Image 1 (cartoon, rainbow, N blue to C red):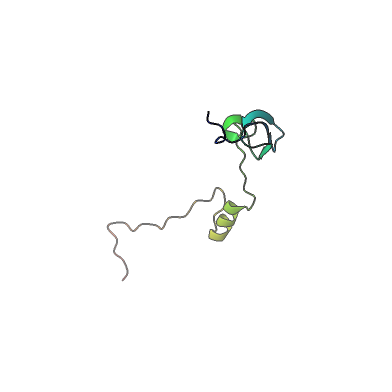
Image 2 (image 1 turned 45 degrees about the vertical axis):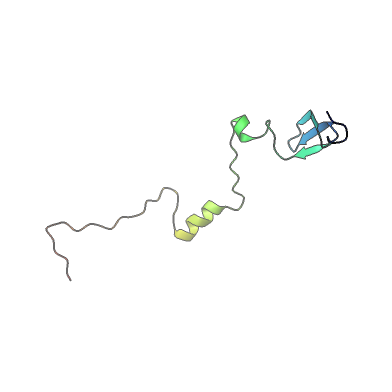
Length: 85
C-alpha cells in the first residue's frame, strides 16, 4: 500500500435501534443504524405493516368503500328489449 493515500481504518461498533451491536472494521467510528438483520422483516420473516396515517382507511372513507362491500353493477338490458328513448 502506498503511504498517505488510504483513509484511517478503525475497529468500529455498529449499534442498531433494536439494541443489536456489531463489531466490524470501517473507516468511520461508532455507527448508529435504525434497522439491522435482527429486526428487518426480510430476515425475521415477520412483517410489520406500518400505516400510521391510516392512508388506506382514508381512501376507503373518501370513496365510500367498506371492507367486504362489493361495488354494485348496473343491470344489463336483455337483447330482446328496446330502450325507451
